[in-house]
Structures are given as C-alpha cells and as structure tokens.
Length: 94
Image (cartoon, rainbow, N blue to C red; front, side):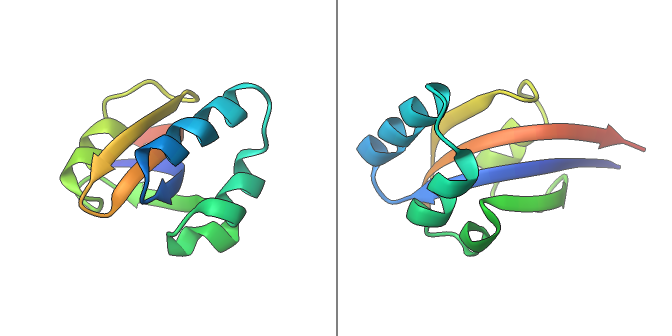
C-alpha cells in the first residue's frame, strides 16, 4: 500500500493560486497562507492533510501525489473543487 504525507492550499481562482505559489517560492509561510486563503477544511491545520492513501483523493490530485517529486511545490492543479497547490512531504510504500 502507498501512503503519503501531504499539505495543500485550495482556492477557487487560478490567478490567486499562482500568486500564492510565488509567495511561497519566495519564502512565504505555507501554513500561514493556507490558514488565510485555503477553502479546504485543512486550512485550520495550515493545509496539512496528514497521511493519505492511494485512491483517497480526487483522481487528478491522487495521481500527482503518488508520482510527482517530493518536497516540491506543485500546482496550480485544477479539480472540480478549484485550484490546488500541493507539497508532498514524503511517500511510504509498505
């Protein structure tokens, strides 16, 4: 089984997602920005989704979480919920 530790920011607007990505890449605090802007329930935890299992997330996000590079900011990625910025902290295979 594959699992990953992930955090993310979800917003409705692609432009806002791109602005937040630039802020984070230039040293902005992911957790603070997630608390301020994310529309996901994880916002109150600074965007922390915690441990997720393969198949638990919407398909476009699930695929990225289990194939993309770890410890890199990915996105914006569009889903039916809006635009996501994702960081895969690490993946575990067991």
